[in-house]
Image: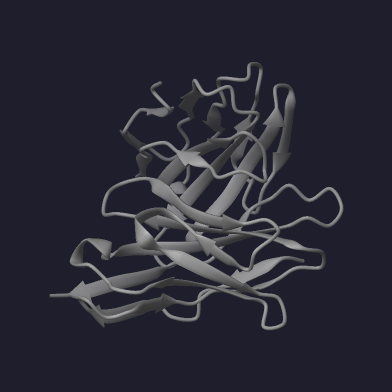
Length: 112
Length: 115
């Protein structure tokens, strides 16, 4: 099993550009989530999904969209990038919200 | 609303000594509690969890944690620290009340184990 994969590993954007961070898992997990990690801020939940077709907002959803058309994939879209979105983004998955999450390697995003 | 606090930004301990990384939480229902570790430039790895049952939970790499409902704490412990335990440790909590499905994270505690 590849586990949780994320692409790209690194990305530099200009303010106003849009892009999609990809996340996929091959463990048939129902629960998937996106976090951002900033120095001194810990992990903050952006969006999460409890199954295909079902998504919900986390703590910091503004400026981000998600969709979950399949169990495997959970892409995160930045609609119009801003410098405040410079961060490391982690995708995670688990069987349910009671189970431990498996994390991807992260995407380091810089917005200029 | 649920919340979690890790009161120490950094913990320093000598190799071979016991270590404790503290976590306290606030929930309206019953908590699901988790500990994760992050090594430099890596993703997070699961250490252990408390859902229900025995208050002392044993996890990976010799770590354990004790759930204390009266003190709303879930401190991470290890009897004898290793230099390789140096990393960033995160506590996370989910409140099982209502339809809440969100996991909320502490800010992390940096553990430094000195040779």
